[in-house]
Length: 237
Image (cartoon, rainbow, N blue to C red; front, side, top):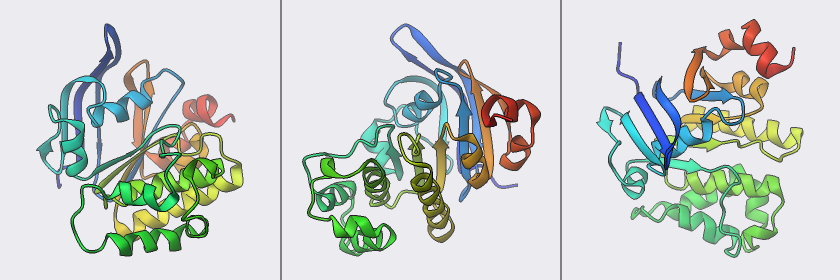
């Protein structure tokens, strides 16, 4: 059996004296979509921040067998980890195209322009608004831009924090459909934190449920979707 592409062991994280993660273990195979579920305050966002060295951490974080723990955020990005934070995090005063180009800042290859056009084809509204300030876009358009900007890195691992936050259900469904297409065509491994558990479990291969900074449940996404405890706590039936 091959080693996991992302392997996290004994992950602890804290904000000052406040401990949030208490030894989290999880793994994601190459090309999989994994989802992290949990109530507010369970440590979901902190987990993604810990993977990017944005919070004080302990433990092991291996990507393709190489240790990421102890490296700075910029080095982790250069190793192919892209993070779409909660709230999107676009540069509001820059144009759509300038935001996309900013996503490729660590690249020096000749195909950056091709990738810009590729994401315009994937998200046509971005192409229509390429010269428009990002801050003037709708919430759904800004989320598309945030994801496209992250993909400009050509990441091997894409981290998404609450991609459905504040979006209408139809836009959310369309966005998740695009993510599954990108996963299938580019083979991009994805780790998604999401409150819309039903939708997330529907597209994920594997799922982890956090409670108070620890993994309470884990397994194939379809099995967790059928678990009575998960359904009652997160799916509402």
